[in-house]
Length: 260
Image: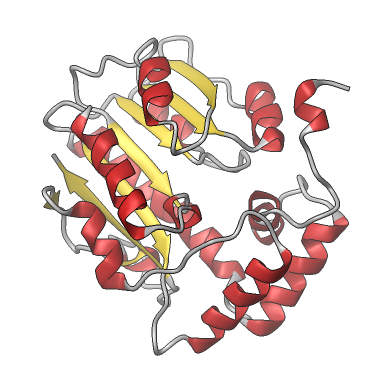
């Protein structure tokens, strides 16, 4: 058994595998499907969050590559490979785009190494690290990315795993402070909202039974991650409402893109 395999716990449901299940993937276990079904009973629309978040990723990366000329992406909290991963979207626009993926989930790493192969012109690399390991991430990313040039920092559904508000804001600030002017922050976050009480019930169930535990924040608290940045239109909104190609219902996953 490899070191990565020994770290995979199939006895408890895991966020990345449940999201994989909700998006129609096969990289999950019975315990994940059971938890995913139970959460969907509490909040029938929650399976749409994963799909909406993935579509937001595609639109944001495509915009940054096409309109802002971004050629470097640092994707922290990658999640299990799916359709239209960051490097696929970016390198479809610019084959020479460089992408560094960061995750500390062993199953994600096992699949990333096997599946996430970039174009010959570009670079796609992987790092086993926790979001909190800012110095480690930046030092390793600098081997592939030129941090003196603009970088898109992708933090989709990952700061929810940092319980402390101030710690999570500090992590994002440290990462953005290390990046060049013209860099962008792309961030999504599960929210608590009075109009969506069933979301709170689903999150409470998850935090009782699953791993890792997550923290909801209000839309206003999510907007604080973009303090000091130029927030692009339409601001911090439901990720399904960020420049959609066709109108879709709002979900309790809010997102935004900000320019340094």
